[in-house]
Amino acid sequence: MMNKHIFTLLHWTWQLPQTLIGWFVYQYIKFKDKNCIIDECTHKSGHYAVMTKSEGFMGGVSLGRYVFTNMQDGMISYRHEFGHSIQSLILGPLYLIIIGIPSSLLAYNISDALNKRYYWFYTEKWADSIAGIDDSTDRLTSTGRPKRNPKWWKNNK
Image 1 (tube, one colour):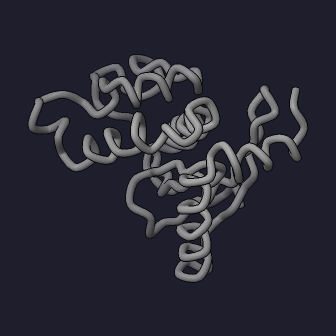
Image 2 (cartoon, one colour; image 1 turned 180 degrees about the horizontal axis):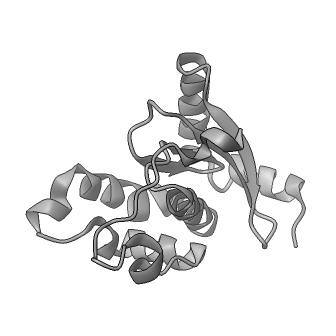
Image 3 (tube, one colour; image 1 turned 60 degrees about the vertical axis):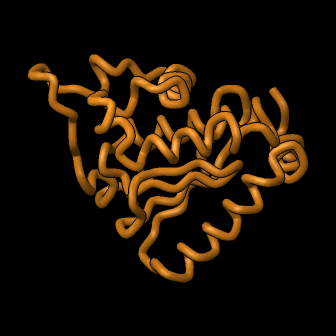
């Protein structure tokens, strides 16, 4: 396991573009949403991320060590975005090109145009795989509808 100082160094060198953008988004959300919840999550590898949960944030995004989500899918969304954070650690400066931009484009209803669910795409499947998420059991109800648990974190401040 690497220690936190090594990961911090990697965040601000190897992952500089996305971590820098993430830092600005983080500052903006803290300023804009005084009720946001900020956690620090650590993966078994020792990798950690600053997890920001905000009711006003649309969707989820991972930018280096900064992860943002509105938590509409509960803990699954939290884990999925942390998976993207680990992708960022693996890919470094290529993360925005290989994962960030394609994932963002997909989020803008490209999956609807292709008549597919969002998580079929390689960027999302890989993040789920890293996070140990099984789409059929973790994301869907027995009827095939997405599981929802809005505002589940309210009692976990």
